[in-house]
Image 1 (cartoon, one colour):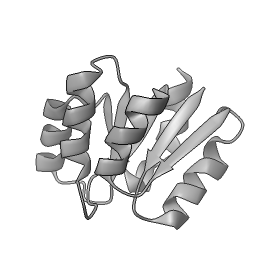
Image 2 (cartoon, one colour):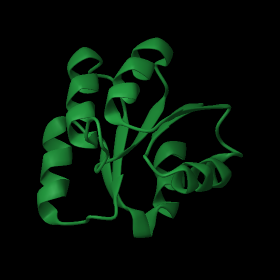
Image 3 (cartoon, one colour):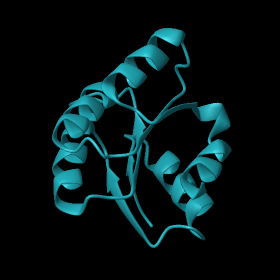
Image 4 (cartoon, one colour):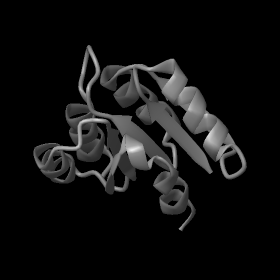
Length: 113
């Protein structure tokens, strides 16, 4: 399985890699949505873990762009900002799941099912 982690926080990316290391063969890392759109086109990972708040391009916009070109893409939007508005925006953009960062352990169950 391949997973692309899109988060502007290196400690979060490292923690997710550590948490998922047993199930994932290859990780791709991105610091913003612009980089994620480019890397998805090159690598077609099985899953994308997408933060919402990033500098150059936010995760909702990046999710929308990836899903427009690759409707089969499986994207989990994750954020510490768990307002219902973010959840609605993520699902409308095409996210497979929405996970608050306080529930990151749920990601392991989602990608392994």
